[in-house]
Image (cartoon, rainbow, N blue to C red; front, top):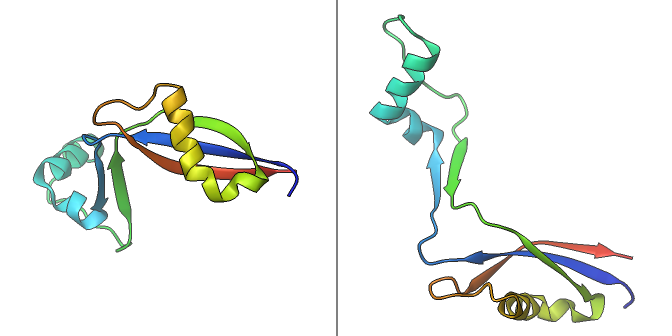
Length: 109
């Protein structure tokens, strides 16, 4: 195959936070509820918070810097290994930060 692939990845650490919170869980939290009411309904009493969308979620995760590199389309099967090698050559891998997650793969002709 001809062409190149642009690979974007990030480094994962053991202490990273990655949590999914449902809207129901968020609104049922007393501190969150109080903060929303005091910000958006000052001076109003008997306010209830609810969500019509049962699937709505908020993701709380550690913000990561994205790294990119290019490889030949022939190397598609080895992209993860090549991303790990790229991270190693750039000295991005450290103690407790030794995993690579592929974020995006884009082909160019």
